[in-house]
Image (tube, rainbow, N blue to C red):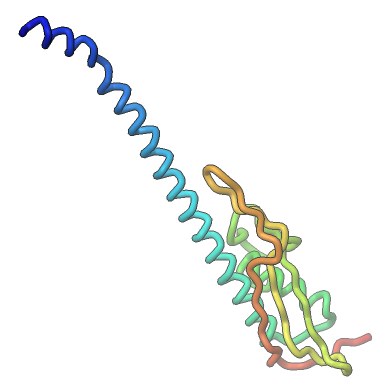
Length: 151
């Protein structure tokens, strides 16, 4: 009986180490995947809020001196959180060139709506990256002061 027990123990020696290594590898992969997915959802939500705030700002702000200046102020709100464009970007790698602003105007040139969207921005995850093409976007009806700009 002792011989059988010793032989079985010798054959199983090291199995616990292998099982532990496989379990830890699988567990860390799962934790990393959940973290990466959570981070991507957090970043996308932050972008959605920034785009929504920029569209709302564009719908209430006066046009100012030109449509280009107006669009630049909206882009700054989407990227930096303020119309002046000061401070750090809300997300790493986000630039005003990633923000698309479309101002719909009627025949007289009066703004009707402002659409703000993110284009060509990449969310970096632990295991993968996600490219956002025209997502997220938000539209707000223009309700601001209409000040015709000088031509």
